[in-house]
Image (tube, rainbow, N blue to C red; front, side):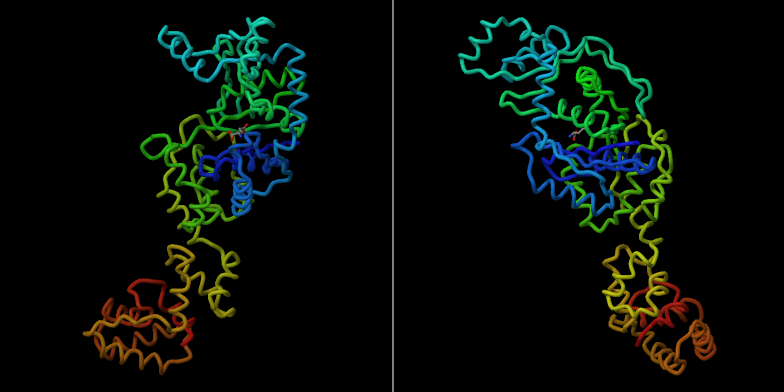
Length: 437
Ligand code: GLU
């Protein structure tokens, strides 16, 4: 069975950049009838916050991206202890004592000498005496995974044949000086234990993947499948990282974007399939194909998202808004035709009350002075024609045309403005029978 996971670190709110792996993993598992795990990568105790965990769940709930299993790394430290022991026993995990400043300086020299800034494994040459001396000085070790310096190859679900030469990669730190575990190790343990079959994540993880494949092998696990999606850029091609703080899912929700509009947009961004509004999660799943995604950066535009939102709103089925209409005081018997009539005339669900005011007559009529007499006469004519039906508008405007000689816009517009308070809106012939005044 296909098992995927979304593994955010709860160090901040989710933003559109995080939504990409969340959605792709969700769609991939749902499309295969598989399982989707929400895993909280919270081994960084200082930066991880419970309020962010709650917000992550709230965001996924809002989007309807349900999970079948919930896990958190902070609850699995025993497992990581035993994995670390296993790696130590194999000579794959070694203590290193350099400080961050020392490492920085060393990288600077390497760059100046035209060499890649790869960790030189000086710690591997330390003798037992060296280590005792360093520890007596009060230094605590961090622990690095000794990479096999060979090329690691995999068939990436998006990038195709991919390889990384681990000879040019620094041995990754798996345990910090304070004993805290880094995600690189924990994630492999979790993926093995939870039976994860496929990992879809950003291309900033490509090098991690090579090192993690070696960790899978060292721990006797079968590496998952990997697919690395491109990262989001803005319309000018610049990275989004600086703007991401303002593109949180919370702020997008608060700006009135509908979940399915956001999902429809994000599900196709960076793929060769057209961006189209989808009316349900089932439709999204049916239209999903990972092989359509490519390596080119995905251009995220708030304008495109907003226009998707409008499209989704203008095609929104009645059932989705029935409760909202009831709450806004729309009589049950006309709620559906009312919605189908106004949905293309609104910019957001928050506009509904304005149209309810048109129904009940609580809107301010707009009457130009030069039309006042005509409008008075027209309204009297309408009053006589009650009850209003689908034919009334034609009949009344026909009579008015004959009596006043007005035609076209001069005939219709003053009446529209008097009845709705605005100069554009839905078909008056269809609106008239719904008015309750
Ligand atoms: N916590 C990691 C991140 O947010 C997860 C990466 C992964 O999917 O393996 O980058």
